[in-house]
Length: 302
Image 1 (cartoon, rainbow, N blue to C red):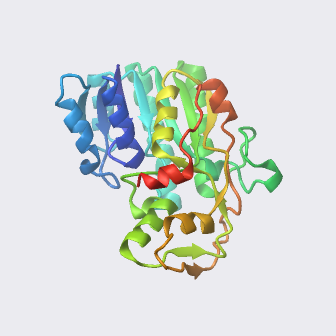
Image 2 (tube, one colour):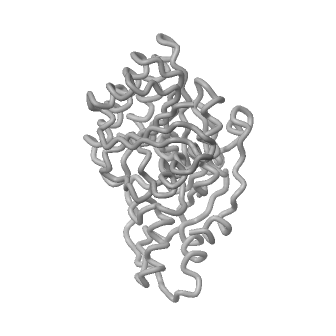
């Protein structure tokens, strides 16, 4: 199968490309390298050189450019993964708005050039507001966007639903919890930031008292859900997470164990989530997916 991966040189994207290549697919990576790195695709390039692996082409272009639409016309992918809608390094309203523009450009290109399905990753933490402790792990239901990122994410879901109804382009929106693993930059998530602090011998920043909870998902588990969504879960928003809450304080205790470093305290952000985890029940039903990597095992592989 020919598959396009938007943001394929990034943390999640490069691991997805590795998996798709190992399964023998023809993969087109579309990435402007604003946050991704060609170094992340070293393993995929090696697989591409093997007769047993799939084929890989890397296109250093913006997904919203005319070159990207022309690429869709020439390469005719059947399946598109859109992994670059919501940048972590730039939380400005303008940057989040570009996510909607990018989604629109991809859906239009999909309509014009016969793409069968688009799979997009969404920040689960922005879709469900501030859920009560009794509602955790939160299930898919009525969305309650938190901040500009959440509003844009819901708009992207509505956009994909419109193209599905009007143009019969299938989609699956995966609401991802906090994904971590090898290749993640220190600015890409709290696990990577803590791991970098441990390696450098510098105290990490811990907002407030560190009792905030998150749902940490290892990259291999996340990639398996993405691959399964290629053939399942059409027309749905599906949570991808473990359903397990871990406090940031406990996370640092495991990562920084034996280092003798005490976190540097910082004020809690006004919009920070206090407690969060997502239910994987719908993913189990519609994707046949469940997480299998516990936090200790995942951290040991960093």
